[in-house]
Image 1 (cartoon, rainbow, N blue to C red):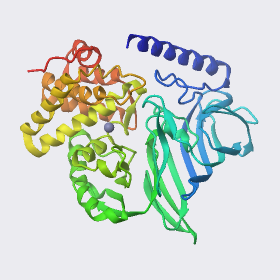
Image 2: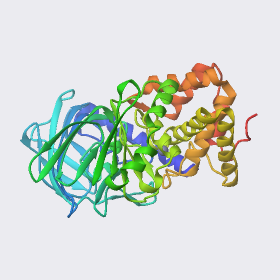
Image 3: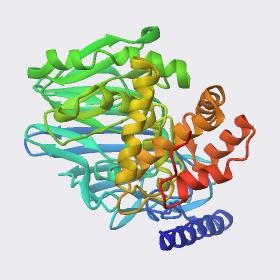
Image 4: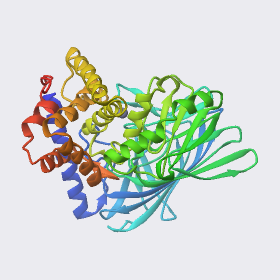
Amino acid sequence: MRKLIVIAGIAVIAGIFLSNATAQDGGQGAPGLGDPFYDRLGNGGYDTLHYMIDLSVDVNTNTISGTTTIEAEATQTLTGFNLDFAGLKISDISVNDVSADYSRDDFELIVIPATPIEEGATFVTVVTYSGIPTPYPDPSVDGFPIGWLRFGGTIFVMSEPGGAMSWFPNNNHPSDKATYTFEITVPELYVVAATGLPVDEIDNGDTRTFVSEMNDPMASYLASISVGDFVRVDETGPDGLLIRNYFPTDQAEELTDAFSPTGEMIAFFSDLFGPYPFDVYGAVVVTIPFGGALENQTLSIFGTDAVDEYTIVHELSHQWFGDSVSPATWDDIWLNEGFATYAEALWAEYLDGETGLTDYMDELYDYMVEEELGPPGLPDSSDLFNGAVYLRGGWTLHALRLKVGDEAFFEILRTYYARFQYANASTEDFIAVAEEISGEDLTGFFQMWLYDEEVPEMPE
Ligand SMILES: [Zn+2]
């Protein structure tokens, strides 16, 4: 653990040094953003504004072809810049309609425009590519392949944390969010479920093009499409919110039932945290029992064996904590998973009152002690989604609630959400809000819950 902190410190300092040096002189944008766990994810020198992902998908051969168009603003004078993009064959790159030079070094795509881009200028990069996407063996999930995945006749995308570069070139870090348009063309038998508001479905004869718009800022790891034999089932949520679910055709009836509490859950969290962040929500269920679910923005994805009420509530709560407020860097992952775990307990409290809450948290506490779960604020870079960031992360929030009282606690959650929505927050940001609202010095409290090795005693 200690070694990890030292490495993290060096990476951050190197990142700052690099971006300062290039910002003054102009030059190539930095190949990373100084994330302590991923020094080469994300790139410096620009902010992305909008992605247009226009792809044809041949489901039988798992081949894609098309373009990704990236509108970005230069934050320094750029003689060149990097994108993150793994595998696939590039046939052309243009910047502002002029063909650009490029080279590749593992997943770094180094683009050299014909003329430098002035600091502050908006520029448009079009990457034309094709091939069979290769899932990315992410080191933080022990080399488990993520990103573009295909099993049987179903294609789906689960990218957290680094997999987005397996299917489109991007600035692959949650700290650079952008809006998106998806234009995905598939054989007419298939249906595309994409993150964002569905705005059009174009019949091309043998194929159909599904268009959706993500109108709010999104981290690239939360961009997703699924292609399969789905039926779309619409519901209306609170204040007329569109809930569009995509279920495997042969399971549509039972899944419609299973997801029916979604609207009530949205109303509950909207009251508790602040208004639902996006203009649409829903779930896609893929016919693969991969034993999990992921909170893709506006469209959580579930394996067939992961459809249960508490997983549904967990992924929904991530729309506030994870998607709208995203981690500043990946070592802040407990801000996603601890919050979503505690949201499950809040739902238990909503359903069964204080007993529901206490039973839920007591069970987590026993497990935490039994497994000797370590500090959630210091996750292992090779095991990002470990039990501690979920359970001890969730318990950190419960312990805070017991310490400062219900009124201050929920005011902390609402203030933190309001302040960092559609953006990013670090653990320090959360602690600062907690201290500001409660008026207490919480240094010792957070040290004990987030950073000390030993599981703290259960608060009174
Ligand atoms: Zn989660």
